[in-house]
Image (cartoon, rainbow, N blue to C red; front, side, top):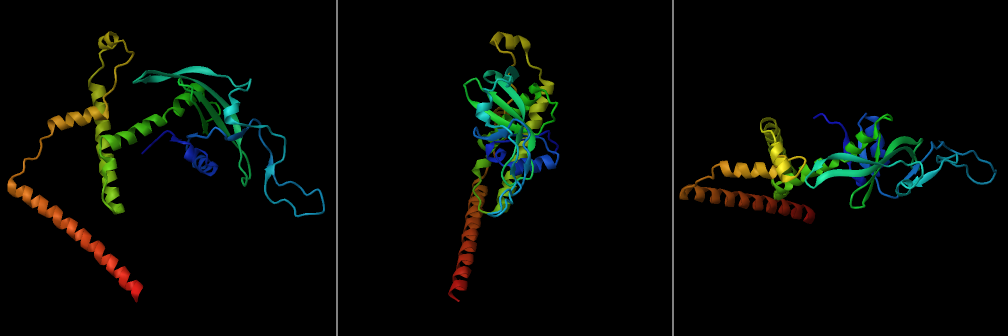
Length: 278
């Protein structure tokens, strides 16, 4: 499926090799990084230093050869040449998403790498005072508004995962084999795709009432949610009506399948036991 960028938390963002691989594949990323991440404010010269004394083994590992200044990302926001702007991102359930943002071109380098890489460092101060930091390989001429909006895009990924678990039963998988997990995940994805199409159709065919928004004193009325679609489906889909014989057959079928599964595990365990004894 086509996508604009990869958004990830700092578990992946702190991995320089991961970011470098994405960049090599031409994939734009917005990666959270920890507050103690070190960045360079000017391009560091990387190389193996020449041996200046006769004694000792020569250096073989690359290092920074010039006096490039480096700083932790959580201290970069207080630098006098870091310019902050209050930016509107979007309307949300709490009203308006509007935070302070700043962005700077920096260089990143880790021991073992042959050269430093230039990246965007995006700084954000949320309304509750939390600070977040992201690295991105977006083009150098990307405006701050675009960087800020893209850096907030991971919310929608997390929202889909949460809906899949809370509303679509993704977290209710109870089988033991990987193939079964694949089937369960595929069905969950199909359900989410259907819900996404329903939301788009609803938005296209059911315009939001501007007068109602003014009456409720909100800028934008909320969109259809996954929970809304699920409730509508529950109200229109008929519940199965089983006869006594059909219910009896289903129970027997489930019990037989469970017994076969137990017998299969016991046979495998017995074969392992016999193999160990011999």
